[in-house]
Length: 134
Image 1 (cartoon, rainbow, N blue to C red):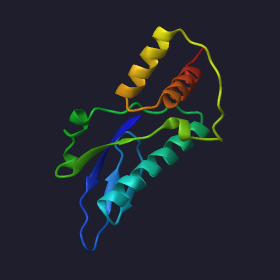
Image 2: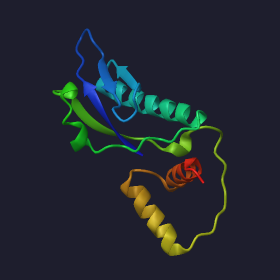
Image 3: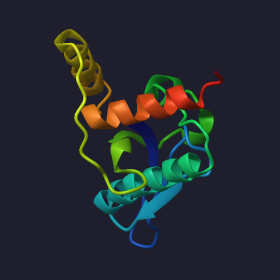
């Protein structure tokens, strides 16, 4: 998944601040811009893991164009952070599944377009499907 983040510039006395608008309460910081980006990715994964533990669905990432209209982020820098939801939770297990090639190609193309791996996409799609009322 690719989540947009907004970064407030730091200086010699202040860290770079990071907010993830699609994940209320998810924020981070770093002494350098690189640290801020690394810490933001970790914060997003921790936030998603908490949602997973609570049985809640992951919010879909918004388009930066929509979020940039918010006055509270005027002058901040927008970046997209890629996270692989297959990294969440327990130890990964290798499985063997069979799919028609055309479906596998479609899955791979969609996952790439979303900035996800095949495994990450399948994991997220499965979790989303199981959270919907039957």
